[in-house]
Amino acid sequence: MASIKGPGAAQTYDGSGLRVAIVHARWNATIIDQLVAGAKKSLLAAGVTEENITVQTVPGSYELPIGVQRLYAASQVQASSTGEGISATDLLSSSTTDLSKSNTAATAPKKPFDAIIAIGVLIKGATMHFEYIADAVSHGLMRVQLDSGVPVIFGLLTVLTEEQGLERAGLGKGGMHNHGEDWGSAAVELGVKRREWS
Ligand code: DLZ
Image (tube, rainbow, N blue to C red; front, side):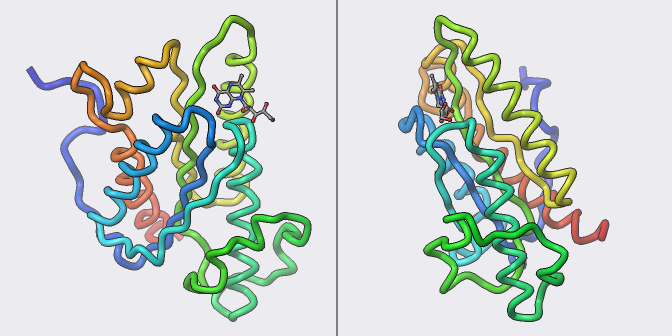
């Protein structure tokens, strides 16, 4: 029997005009790498071009909200400097962040990101660390997307064991699909809809 979980029947959206960023943590790299690959696969399948996909990393999941926020602000500044975005005076300053010096800046198209996917894997340990980080990151990412208006796709796995993480990256024995693919599709859908809703 088909699972009742998930976003329902597959929807098709044309991502060919979109610019999308993936910001991912480096903790739990085996799982992360597979999730990022899954997200990229869906973006490319929907027509997002390779040069319109920017991938940036942060050390751990706790740094995801600031990474997403600064990368988006930097893309707005970049767009405004070429006359294709909003005024730089409306923006948060990006002058103090390394993200504004992203090595993709020279080649990336001059428009702000249409959606950003934040990917991290938190694995519960013996202390309360997991709960505090999961809570802070969830609220931080929601705050960034509502404050900025750019869709931020929630690619944070909060798992109790490494095996649960491997399963959700499509690497387990249980046959679960790679959740990163869902996040890529969500980014395209929200990127397209955000333009419609503007
Ligand atoms: C410190 C820490 C721990 C214990 N576990 C994880 C984890 O499972 N996944 C993850 O993405 N990051 C972890 N971190 C690192 C924190 O997210 C953060 O990078 C540091 O506390 C520095 O702010």
